[in-house]
Image (cartoon, rainbow, N blue to C red):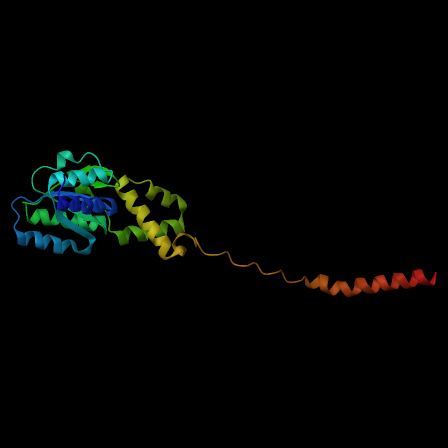
Length: 216
């Protein structure tokens, strides 16, 4: 029977896999406790950096619907569960690894798709959430074809585009052409001046005709 602490760890990891925008697996062999603290501090609130046994991490990933991490779960493994901006965290990990070669990026997961180390490093070259959001908003306002081009970008960028666009639409519907705003009421047209002026004349003509008929 599984120990309660292991069951709790798997449940926590499974939730992190399910709720994260992306996941990066690293090997921290050779890093000191202080180094790990510095790394966690540099990632801030954008990611949770957790050290867990490979077997428990693999079970949690499978339960979250992620398959194919076996080859990356070897040696001492720490996982960055990204809840904030993906590019920012990827840049932070890449820069930390350059300054501390003991940290090795092994791979990751994005939108349920397993990525190799090179693909994770490419995420660091993406534009930040703020820049991308501004481009998406501008494209939606200016030209639908440009927005389609952005959304048709590679998976890593498309996932972030859609997420940013969804959040932008919720916070400010006007960014995508006023979606969610009620249509303005259409006012009744003003009566035509010429018709208004001709109405009394028509009435007078009708009265004259009726008088003539009565005289006959």
